[in-house]
Length: 161
Image (cartoon, rainbow, N blue to C red; front, side):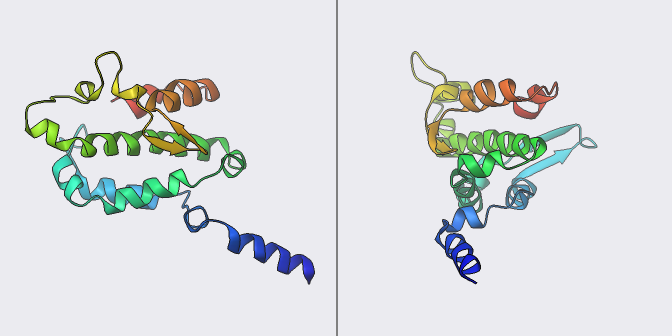
């Protein structure tokens, strides 16, 4: 009985976002379904960034759930779950970077995500989100985590295309 109470105590002490993390990424799928138009029989797609910026709470909630995942929780997952987590984190935080700077696109200060970097840095080198307990960059997710930990030839398409 003490063991059960101890375990229940640990569960209730976990952060709410970590408890509610959905490894099926349904919340992100919903965001994409609401803001990405697919056409030409699935060969092309376009994100409605302005609409996403106006209705960003579901994306923000999803990203908060990713940020709440601790390294130990991540390490307990299968390789496929880890890869899905990292790819979706990369793409989700990329969307955040764009919508956080949406006014620059309308004002002619940016035509591409490439324009969101500094004079001597790229937007992929900005530390603007927390993942696995530390401040991270998109470059870290792609080059130091995904490409190092996974032998997956489709990574380029999942992250860049």
